[in-house]
Figure 1 (cartoon, rainbow, N blue to C red):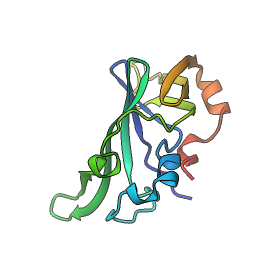
Figure 2: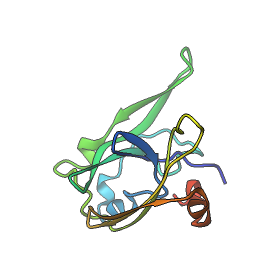
Figure 3: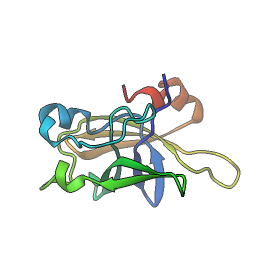
Figure 4: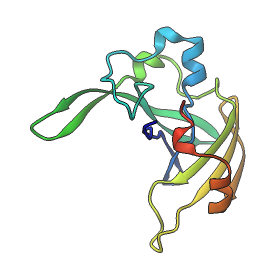
Length: 147
């Protein structure tokens, strides 16, 4: 199994990697809104990646993108935003309820990462807890939880 590209949550001016696909339940209900035209990659089996933020205790979609090609000259993946197609009139993730386990994407100067657990109910942040590294690791293998 290939390590999957993680979605990002911005919280208090820091970036955290998510442990699951927030859009999964949304696209199960609205399959016609799922992005199309993405390049198939083993590290992005769901075909899209997203970025979220917490604003006024609400989980907000900031962007939803696909990889549509590869620039051989620059050696870069080419991406485009498809958020307007997937979510034409909605940015609050009111369809999502669950537990988010987060790890910071960059460490503090002393190489320590930050770990959080967020309880979200219908798109609203209800509870947040700081986790130790051990508590985070004991809760699962998060990069593979996208399946």
